[in-house]
Amino acid sequence: MEPAIHPDIRPDANPLPGLRGRLTIPVLAFGGILMAVMQTVVVPLLPDLPRLTGASPGAVSWTVTATLLSGAVLTPVLGRAGDMYGKRRVLLLALGLMTGGSVLCALTSDIRVLIAARALQGAAAAVVPLSISILRDELPPRRTGSAVALMSSTVGIGAALGLPLAALIVQYANWHVMFWATSALGAAGLALAWWAVRESPVRAPGRFDTLGAAGLAGGLVCLLLAVSQGGQWGWGSARVVGLFAGAVVILALWSWQQLRADRPLVDLRLAAGRRVGLPHLAALLAGFAFYANSLVTAQLVQAPEASGYGLGLTIVQTGLCLLPNGVIMLLLSPVSARISTARGPRVSLAIGGAAMALGYVVRVADSRDLWAIVLGAAVVSTGTTFAYSALPTLILRAVPAGQTASANGVNVLMRTIGQAVSSAAVAAVLVHHATGAGFPSLRGYQLAFVMAGTVALVVIAAAFAVPADAANNDGRRSLSGTTGRTGKALEGA
Image 1 (cartoon, rainbow, N blue to C red):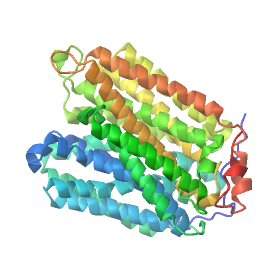
Image 2: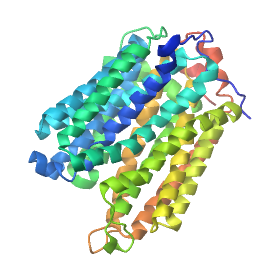
Image 3: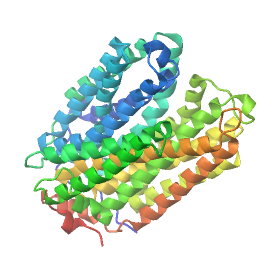
């Protein structure tokens, strides 16, 4: 059994007194929810955007792709910048870019400006790892676990809330109103963060690795562009094959550069150790399993009744079906934190993988009745809560204080890559099992569930492969203030 040791970077942590201190956690959680909302609000608009903007469906799809790409690139970059220049400062920058992107979306009907604005909104992906790092620096040990679990769960909470709210606005008001609403929410989140969050004194000295940031950006853009557009362009097309080849070459050169840099953007020696590398792998797998749940559920319940299994629900009704998932994540995040405290985050991660797999068993058993669909999705969301809550705790216990934001940024990046791969894999399965009427067969959906459930089982194996003594590294090693090349000392066997 793992000892019940909390992250303890600052044993003298003393949150701001009074109202500001009490609101620090809710304000940061609000920022995380906003991030997830920004990623999902455009979904109800996608069918109508070609008509509203005069653009092709292919061009419109970039309103989603641009946010994915910018978020993937900026998350580890802003995380590292936060470690070096101040987490609060970079958090406010991310929230400001997100809000500015919303304002641009509200002001334009030009698809080119809209895509650029959505790319700005992608900067919000760095909010969660930056907030987790702030919580580690500012809170006393007894409060860190539950706060980090809540922060990590905001991704699912915001996604579940954003879809029905956006659908309601789009259905009953001009589509620009939706972006004005998100602009107001973003401005509120920015103002609250400026007021309630104080700057952490924990910094990682040195110069920012600009070359490493450029290399990582180039490699990720090639990789995620190929994954996200492969179904549309053709997996064997010259563009997709060229992008995959470019990603391999660029990331190989980037890795070579990172291993030789004095202050690398990502400490690959630390990331390659079992204590950090396996949580990163688990994040990719959990992201895959989580995203398949939302993606397939939305398509399944909206399928026409003529398919023989579909319920023909509207986008608003679909959002309401997914709404319980967000409530579950909100309620169960403190439960996951208590289990991580008592039994260790490895156990919480394993429980998460098992619950996700169980949920997909329910999905395979019955994908026709609404109650069974909602139940299965809720069980998967339960597992997602435990997994997502445990992952940052594993990272916090394995990295020094000066790398908290960048390491959690990489962990969130791995979730993003997992979600992108999940989207491509599910789409490929459903297209391969399409019926003559043009919609996927029920067997196609069931195979997608089996695939996601199998990935969830691998999460369990990854959880128990993490060294059991990972919790011991946090307080003893990080208090020393060690930064830079600490990987060898922290690597797992």
